[in-house]
Structure formats: C-alpha cells, structure tokens
Image (cartoon, rainbow, N blue to C red; front, side, top):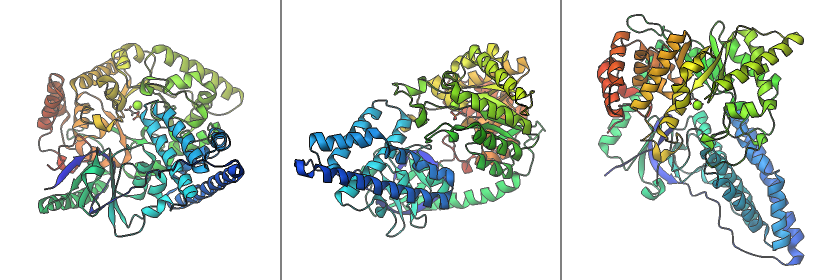
Amino acid sequence: MSTVRDGLPVSEGISFGPVRILRWGVPDVPHETIGEEQIESEVARFHEARDWAQRRLLEIQEGTEERLGSLEARIFEPQLLMLEDTEVLEGTERYIRENRLTAARAFHWRMLELQALWVRTANPMVLDRLNDLEDLMSRVLRRLLGLPEPGDMTGNGDPAILVARNITPSLTVQMDPEHTLGIATEQGTRTSHWAILARSMGIPAVAGLVDLTGLTEDGEQAIVDGRIGRIVLNPDERDRRVYQQRKVRIREWEDELAAIARLDAVTLDGQPVALRANLDIPAEAHRAVEHGAEGVGLFRTEFLVVGRSSMPQEEEQYEAYRQVADAFPNRAVVIRTFDLGGDKFPMFLHMPAEENPFLGWRAIRVCLDRLELFRPQLRAILRATAHGDVRILLPLVNDVEEVVRVRELLSEEEDRLRRDGIPFHSGYKLGILVETPAAALDAAELARHCDFFSIGTNDLVQYTLAVDRTNARLSNLYNPFHPSVVRQIHQVSRVARAAGIEVSVCGELAANPLGAFLLLGLDITALSVAWPSLPEVKKVIRSFRIEVAREAARKALAAPTSAAVTSCLVEGLGDAVDLSAFSGRWSLSIPS
Ligand code: PEP
Ligand code: MG
C-alpha cells in the first residue's frame, strides 16, 4: 500500500527513487569537565575549530558562487557572521575558563542558549536562522569531536531521494544533483535558505511533511512531486504510471508555454491584461522578459538587506533598480520598498525579538522608524525613475498618515536631488500594497492619497483568516478563495475604479488559473506573477471571454463557502483550460 503525504512545494520537478534518510543532526556532546592546566589548550582548540569552520564556510561559499551565483553564495553570510560574533566567542571562552568545560561542551552550551533565545520569538523566519545556527553548530562540534564533516553524508552512494527532519544550506550545496533525485523534509518553507538553493540546483523538493522521517526507511521506493508538494511512499504500479504521465504532460506543456510567451495577454473577446512579473532579484529581469512579461508588477528589494552585515548603499541600490528599469523600456517597473520584519530580518538592524512578528515591527513601520535605511532607498528609486516608468510601492500600509509621511520624505529627497543636479522623473507614481483588512476596508480614503493599488493577497489572506502563511500545518486553512477574501478584493477593485486609479494583484492568487479568472471577473486587469508562471497565466487569460469571468465572479461573490466559490469558478471556466497541468496548491489537478 502506498502512503501519500502533502507538504509545501518548494522546488519543481518529479522524481522516482529509493529513500535515503539523512541523520545529520547536531552530534551528542558528552558532558566533560577539564582541569585547570587544560584551560588554555581547550581555548586554543576552540579557536582552531572556529578558524577551520570559517575556512570551510568560505570554501563552500566560493564554490557556491562559482556554481550558482553570488546571490546564492550570500546565503552563508549569516553563519560567517556568527563565527565572528563576540557573544558566541566570548561566551564559549567564558564557559571553558569559568565552568571548566571542554571546548565542545562550552560551545554547545553557548549555542543552545542562543537557540533558546531565538526559539522564544516563535517566529518562522527565525526558524530559518535557527537552521543556519544548527548548520554551524554541527560543523564546529564535529570538528571538535573528531567526527566527519556534515557534507560527507550527502554525496556518495546510489542516487536517492534524501529525507530529513530538516536540512541545511551547506548540506544542500554539497549535494550532487546527479545523485540527489529529490529532497523531502519535515521542516522548512519556500523561503528557507536550503529551498532557495535546491531551486537553483534544479533538485525537486517538498518541505513541511509532518512526521515524515517516522513514516519511511532507507531503501523504500518513493516519488517526489515538487510541483504540487507531494511525496508518495512505496508507490504501486498505478502511482508510477500516473506520475510518469504527469511528468511527460508537464514537459509537453512547457514546450507549448514557450510559444505562448510571444502572444498578447488578451481574453478571447479582446480584453487586454497587463501581465507583469514579480522579481526577487535583478538577475531575474531577463528571464521575465523571455517569458513575455509586460513590465514588473512587484520588485521585492529585500535581497539587498537580508543576510547582510551592513546597510545597502544608495549607489548599489540605484544600480540594481536601474538594471531592471533598463530591461523594461516604456513598461511599468514597480519597486517595493523594504518589506522587513515578519519573516525577513537583516542582521544590522538588530531587530528586537517579538512575540508576533507578522503583527509587529514590519515593512513600512520599520522604514518610517529607521530613516537612515529608508531615505537612501527612496533616493535610489527616484534616481531610477530617470530610466523608465519606475513606480514606488509601499508594503503593509494601514493608514493615510503613512502615505502622507512618505510623500513628505520623497519631496525632501527630490529637493536634494535637484540641488545636487541629479536627474529623476518627477511624474512617477506612488502606490500601496493592499494587504491588510484595514487597508481593504479603508481603501476609499487611501485611494485619495495613492496613484495605484496593488493587492498583496499572500498577506491579505493571512491577516484576514488569521492563518500564518508560513505554517505548514495550517496550509489547508490558508485559502485565498475564502468568501471574506473575495469580497475584499471586489471592494478594493470597485474603489480603485471609482477613484480612477490602477489596481493590480501581485499575490500568488494571480498565478492560479482559477484566481486569474476570478480577478479578471472582478475587473482587475493588471496581474503580476512570479516569472515562471507568466505563460501559464497568459494561456488561461486567452482561454475565456471577460463576460464569462464576470458572471462567474458575480456568483462567487454570493457563494457562502470557499468550496462554493471554487465551484463557481470551475464551472465558469469549464473546459477552457486543462487545470491538471498547473502548479500550485489549489490546483485541482493533484492526482488522487
Ligand atoms: C503579498 O503579500 O501578497 C505580496 C505580494 O508580498 P509578499 O509575498 O512579499 O509578502
Ligand atoms: Mg506581502
């Protein structure tokens, strides 16, 4: 009998093979004390291990840069910083000297203390940082205890699907994609550092598979489907056939998509749609162009800060923004100001631990409090306006005052640029992400102060339903087709139309076929999706008439449950689209 488990899709691809369970955890450290005469030699041993770990990490970082690029290489910065952190170094030395602990025990204690401190924040991004901490702890302790390095466990042996409680970035980059058929873990999310690396390396991966390591054993056959976030353990002949066919169909579909990228994004009856791309780094701009993006609807800028040891300079930012603007001449390029906090913490801000970081010091709130961070960003974006239709997007806005304050800051920075003779285009647009119920309900007031709205459904769903978007256990409850969400989107769309400002959607909902159909039906004709989804969404848009979408949306607005909303959309879309080939969690295609 096969066993099927669903988790989070974190890296695309379908693979078949035997399971290998990775038991890489932090090694057991015996509790041993030392005599006074050993203190100096233990301190020296600790420093030797630290220096060695630093060298190894730098080597791994260098190798990563060569193989995958500089952005991926930066993933190791937090660990390198920890190795220089006086709290780690002095704390460990103190335990050796004052508590007469061995170097391994002292380092272990110090790291456990830090871990306990971080765990208390109960925040999902800290889980990613904890993952970095465990990676480092394991490396240094293995050196001190004379055990093999963590990476030694991944590469050799026959090709396999690696199963683990959790995995670390350094383990991932040491995997040989020829031997690693797939990765399946209990913990982690799409934004975990190891998941980002797995995507860059093209290894299919699924995270958030609750209790997985207890369900399988070494050598058991499995199928990993990273497109829908599923593992099938002990598959039978029928399972194998289904997933083989799926693999073939997805390949055919991708060939077809390449042709679609060149077509216009219009409905069957000619309603044009501004189909733009979401970018996380500037290097994605050319991929977005290839995939037929009509501009950038959301350029996230956190790559400039997360995992960095110092604030990004204006010049570096300007270059990044300009690079994207240059890739899209005469097209909208919407740059979102730093969306920090929540699950993204730059080290240099020393953000306080919070009980509820998603309800805490986040996004525009951080920027308005830390002008030394915000002003250079505004200046860099203003300078980029000289290179195209560059627009500014503010995340997590709830209040008109926040927009008014940003306008004041912008006007001050414009004056400075003028004084310094630096060019910019003064007709740029300023908009907000509507991603809280407060903003959706107060949209009419906010519209008077904004040039455009972009609805961030990823957060809007989380805040409306009170469901943490990063909690794998709650992924069934995180439903963007909930009637309360549909009604808010409708309300924001109506308000924007009445105010004569553009409204777009840049959350994942826009990349879902039923979502795109619904949004067009709600008269939202600007969508922004991750660049790989562009052709898929375009194909959907080209498959129906706008009146049909409007009719389905009207019915969906009156539907009492999420399931009823989905049914209205499925019915409305009819056979126009083969939903079975699509990626995404709400896809109806998931084989049963
Ligand atoms: C959103 O919240 O929908 C959004 C697009 O922003 P992010 O996913 O970066 O929070
Ligand atoms: Mg958001």
